[in-house]
Structure formats: C-alpha cells, structure tokens
Amino acid sequence: MIHRYYGLFCFSVLFVAIPTVYSCSEHNVIDAIFQNYNSRVRPVLQQNITLDIQYELRVYSIMSIDEPEEIIDLLLWTVLLWHDQFLTWNPEDFDGCTSIKVAADQIWSPDVYFINTLDVASISPTVAQYVSIFYNGSIRRALKYKAHLGCSMEINDFPFDTQNCPITVGLWTYNYSEAILNLRYPIVGLASYNGDPDFAPVMSNASEFEIVSYTGAEIMTTVGSQNYSELHYTIGLKRRPAYYVFVILIPSYMLTSLCIIGIFTPNSNINERNEKVSLGLMTLMSMTVILNIVADQMPKGSKGLPLLGIFVLYEIGICAIAIILSVIIIIIHQRSLSRGWKPPALCLWICRARVSKTARGMSQWISNLICSD
Ligand SMILES: *[C@@H]1O[C@H](CO)[C@@H](O)[C@H](O)[C@H]1NC(C)=O
Ligand SMILES: *[C@@H]1O[C@H](CO)[C@@H](O)[C@H](O)[C@H]1NC(C)=O
Ligand SMILES: *[C@@H]1O[C@H](CO)[C@@H](O)[C@H](O)[C@H]1NC(C)=O
Ligand SMILES: *[C@@H]1O[C@H](CO)[C@@H](O)[C@H](O)[C@H]1NC(C)=O
Ligand SMILES: *[C@@H]1O[C@H](CO)[C@@H](O)[C@H](O)[C@H]1NC(C)=O
Image (cartoon, protein in one colour):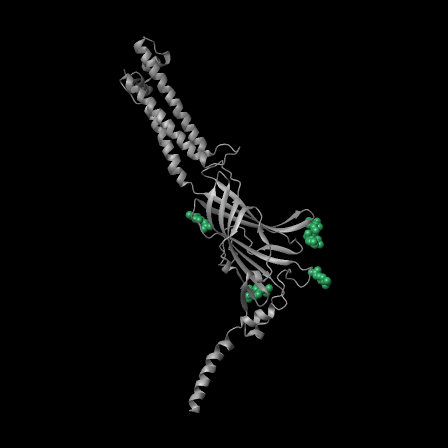
C-alpha cells in the first residue's frame, strides 16, 4: 500500500518538477525587472548618454497611387531596436530565461514619427502591440502602418516615367543628444542585402509601379536651436507602361491611321464623299475621349502635358488637317461640277502630271484619287 502511494508521489513530483526546472519563469523576471521601472524615463543610466535606435523600414506593398492628387498609399513594416539599460537580468538567476514579451505600453518607447506623411494609421491590432525584451536589455518592437504620403509626381515622361517618393522618419521630441536614429541596414540599392538573408526592403512587387530603387540616409536637421535625428528614405517607382500602350497608344495610333486612310478613299459620287468627313469627325471625337482619359490621370499643375498627351494631341491635329483637306476637296469638286469652277492649278497639275517615268505611278495614283470623276 505504502509502496503504491510512494510511486504515485514520485510520479506527480516528476510531472510538476519537469516544467519548473527546465522552463523559464517569465513571472519572476517581470516581477524583478519592473519593480522600480518607470516607463516615462528615457532608458539610460546617465543623462549624457545618447540612446541609439536602430530603425528598419520595409515597403510591404504599394496600395494605391493617385497621380492627380499626387498621393501614394503604402503598407509599411517597421522594426525598432533599442537598448533599455533598466530592463536587464542575468538569465542564470531566472532558470535560463533569455527573453520575455510584454505589452508595449508597459515600457518606454521612442516617439518615432513619419514626418512627411499626410496621414498614417497603425494597422497592428492592439493585441499584437507587444515587444520582445532580451536579458541584455535589447528591445525589439515591430509595427505595421498604412501610410498616406504626399509625393510630387514628375509626369513629363508619362507613361514611361519614374517617380521618386520620399519617406521621412524622425524623432518628434527627443533631440540629437538624447536619441539618434540609425539605419538598421545601410541601404545603398535594392541589391545591397548586406549579407543578411532576412533583408528585403521591398516585399511585394505586383502593381502598376515597380520599385527600382530604395535608399536611406541618416540626417541631422536643425529646428530652431535644437538638432534632431532623421532618416530619409527614397523609393524609386517605375511605371509598367503596358496598360497605356495597349489601351491608349495603339488604339489612338490605329484611329489616326484610319482617319488618314479615310481621306484617300476614292469615290465616284458626290454624296459618298461626305462619308469621309463623318469618318474623320468620328475619329476626332474618339481621340478627344482618349485625350480626356490621359488628362484624368495627370496632376493638373503647371507642369504641362505628358509625353502621351502630346502624342494624342498631335494625332488629333493630323486628323483635323485630314478633315479640312477632305472638306476642301469636296468643295472644289462640287463647285467645279455645279458652277464650272476651274480647279486650282496645283490640282490640275497633279491630275495631268506626266512628270517623269519614276513619279508616274505615284502621280497616277494620286490623280486617280482626286480626279476620279
Ligand atoms: C557623463 O557624465 C558623467 C558624469 O556625470 C561622466 O563621468 C561621463 O564620462 C559622461 N559620459 C559621457 C559619454 O559624456
Ligand atoms: C542582446 O542579445 C540579443 C540576442 O542574443 C542580441 O541580438 C543583441 O545584439 C544583444 N544586444 C547587446 C546590446 O548586446
Ligand atoms: C520586380 O519585378 C521585376 C520584373 O517584373 C524585376 O525585374 C524586379 O527586379 C523586381 N523588383 C524587386 C524589388 O523584386
Ligand atoms: C537637447 O536638449 C537638451 C535639453 O533640452 C539641451 O541641453 C541640448 O543642448 C540639446 N541638444 C541638441 C543637440 O539640440
Ligand atoms: C547642432 O548642430 C550644429 C552643426 O553640427 C552644431 O554647430 C550645433 O552646436 C548643434 N546644436 C546643439 C544644440 O548641439
């Protein structure tokens, strides 16, 4: 009987003992390190020590780009790393505990701020606002943001343009002698992975724009008598022009070709010649609609018309000239029939051209067109 109880006792001791011996006691760690902790104090032991903050900014994806308003929406992932000199412990005193996680509002956090954004919203759910604390005091905080950025668009080369959008990150109240922002990865170009396989500044690459460059710089700015630390990132975005080529460039080119070919259709009858003008006007209207589509995409500043707009405008001009020519031909043709007008000398010259043997085919063809009646 005693023997059996003894066995049960041993069994239960094993069960209780294993977890307590081999796992870390976060409870004890938190009790110990937060005993005299004040989350309102910059976490340095002496006031003259500057706190170094490592900052990493990743562009998770481009959500939208509004060219007329010159606004770009990005989904950003950020990682902040700093050293809290009050939150340290010796892992040997706490069952080998090397890291714990606590709610972010329990500890001091730097007031890192997106300076040039119009609006920024943290989209990390509140339950996920936790930070990791390592035994040596290193703290890691990760956040996800939706940033609404102003970005001045250079549209002269549209749709073959590249835009450079800045993102400025800074500390709002702590000055340069109190806290400094450092780039966690000194970014020179997209290809500079700095030996770290985890480094991917741009994570999604499937939108109208392709990210072709990404740079970051550590800057000290002076506001009034105080110096502040800032990080200046620049994202280079190159447009993928396929959509505009297939939806605007090729159709408008075909319409203009149609308009020009339409003029040269030979007809034998007075009424049918009017069809040329209708065809031209229809084309002209379609072109205006296309120009409107291009114009709607563009900021309406003083920057002039983009490349694609100029192209469409030229095509409209060509088409208009073609229509005017058709109308003149119709007028001359009809007057020469009904009122016995003599066609202008140039027309007659073309009609009767027997210039040379080489030009004969060409002039014959043109005179057939114009003088077909
Ligand atoms: C900070 O000030 C203390 C004295 O208050 C001095 O011993 C220490 O060297 C100073 N540290 C720096 C980095 O200036
Ligand atoms: C603290 O420990 C972590 C994890 O081992 C390490 O990544 C970090 O560099 C350490 N920080 C310092 C200041 O030693
Ligand atoms: C994005 O995709 C293009 C091809 O579609 C590729 O050439 C480029 O390197 C990609 N950029 C990144 C940052 O992955
Ligand atoms: C930062 O602020 C402190 C106190 O307000 C001031 O003594 C120090 O000169 C400032 N440093 C810089 C770099 O502006
Ligand atoms: C701010 O930076 C400038 C230029 O480096 C320096 O001359 C000035 O003393 C700094 N201001 C403070 C308050 O440290």
